[in-house]
Image (cartoon, rainbow, N blue to C red; front, side, top):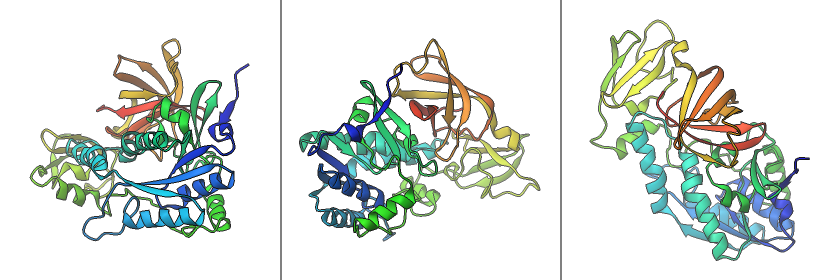
Length: 367
């Protein structure tokens, strides 16, 4: 008989010290307060990751959000500490974000932030502060099946954030606690009000925390001298327009192309070497195959005897497509979709699931 899934939260003994990453939003604040109410020794920690530019409003991780985190920690009677990670965020998230767009691919900065900045920092700080685990406000379920750590989708499918955590590694996953994994957003806000948290009605952060509005303008400012104009061509290779930088386009894009061809057209390819944007019909952005580079696996036997049928999510808001995966070599995973998948975009993450269980995932390569 297969062993059952046990949530990491249920494995914590009463009074155990748990670090909670607090962004200033309602989700992480509720996670911290619920753990405190459960009788755990909770320490709130915030990472200072970003300073808004040009006086733009913050969406996360900026000074006013740190103030919200401190206020929520005080309301829950928790100690709270802030640590500077500005340089790490710049080097591991912002710079790669700009470079990716200039290379003609569409980055996944939230995956990079969790994998390369936040989760590693929380693991290290938990150990420094004598905590046996760390918690976040993600809508996902972290637990164990026997001795093996396992990540599962959050029960609220509209808020599920397991996609963003697929790359954190088994060691961090074994320490991760996700108190909101079985909750939905209305329930979390209701808990925030019950607990008397000052940010109970704070709006959700929907966009990138470091980009306000148009990401193209952000890249323009960050990549001065590296942005090149170029042609927009149709499926026959005919020039039908011009653009001011390939970073303003992504594979599968239909709106904001700057051309009118009398029918719907989509970006099918972005050639960074020639700064050319290629357009085509809807069928031209469908594919039955993809290659995924440098996949990280949370399940050691992800391939079984050589191939495995999975649900593949090719972007965060993708509901998933049935597919078969197999290893081409140490760095490359072949993906064969059972039905044509739309807008499989280079640079985005393809995350593999078996039912609710996250197997792993990696970056979509050029098709």
